[in-house]
Image (cartoon, rainbow, N blue to C red):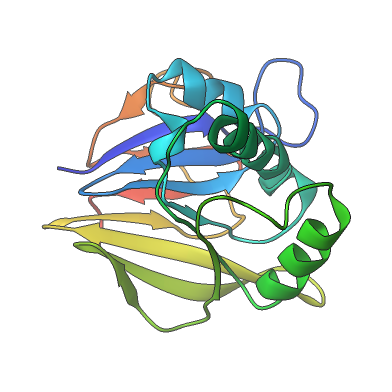
Length: 200
């Protein structure tokens, strides 16, 4: 079974909605994008944030990325000062991911000495696997001079597609306005980026 929870679907500053962020649960717990206010919505789901092992980024505009900094700082506090244990973290994104995170970790105090494994992976248009979940990244057009990705996730017979920055045509009741509410397979949501679950 694949379950999607919309953590946020707004833009950078919105009066009622968090920015882009999606929690996908299969045999893995995967985050797609991590915009402002999505971390607090992740905590509200009851999912242990210290068990998240993979974060996939579509691109690095702040409204898809900025809560990662708070998330990672929290993980450092948890493991360094609260005797917490967490598995290694893999950050996956488009071309430029390694360069961005190298600069970020070199600049922010204590980020470069995590007591858990941290790995960065740049992907383009070739499929890969996270456990039994197949990830198919595709280059999408969003911003000049910025490599951006859409992702299709497959687990069992159910695909999930984060297909780029274009509107969809149907909206499940309140799905975009209710962060933390799972969306069932077979639905699509009209939010800032189009999501399709159970569609080929």
